[in-house]
Image 1 (cartoon, protein in one colour):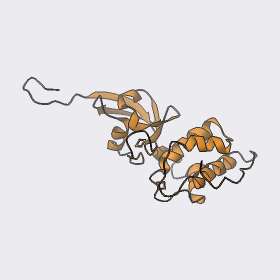
Image 2 (cartoon, rainbow, N blue to C red):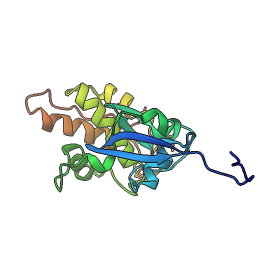
Image 3 (cartoon, rainbow, N blue to C red):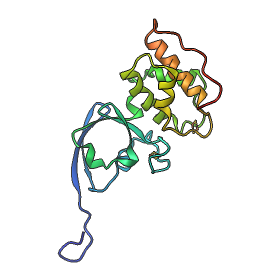
Image 4 (cartoon, rainbow, N blue to C red):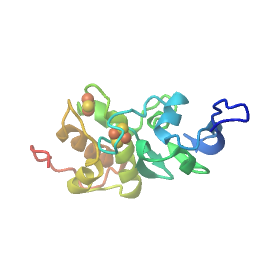
Amino acid sequence: MFGSRGVFVMKTMELHLTVNGISQNWSIAPGELLLDVLRRQSYFGVKRGCEKGECGACAVLVDGKPINSCLMFAAQAEGRNILTIEGVADGGKLDPLQEAFLDHGAVQCGFCTGGMVISAKALLDGCPDPSEDQVREALAGHLCRCTGYLKPVEAVLAAASKRKPRARRAKPVAEVAR
Ligand code: FES
Ligand code: FES
């Protein structure tokens, strides 16, 4: 917008939200995307990929639900709880999902990994003993250009087994990603 002297003035608004358990109060432009605001605040684990909601690299949990942050206005996060990949580990201790991704060779360049772990976490939080199909469905919105999809699915099933030792043991995952 233009001020009284014809000078362009950026309109801002306050945003109050919780990110990884910490209350934040940020100044944002009304039309800014959550992805842009999070990265400006140094949450660089939230990756900028397609910016069209197709790759899942920018996924975060909003009140426990996986959301592509490139499709959400930051203003819509007012009062919400956001979890980024930076908040998944417990201090210096990796989440079992993160360990499983490493143990199962499910990470190569890692660009897609944060988003995958975020979606897998949402799945396991709501469904501790998922089927292979449920894991595939949870990861369906994530594109990976180097590792493929077999190892991430194996990793999520392994993490589920680890979280719930008496759960049905994971069956071998089909070779071809559906
Ligand atoms: S950058 Fe958001 S889905 Fe690709
Ligand atoms: S590990 Fe490189 S894009 Fe998935």
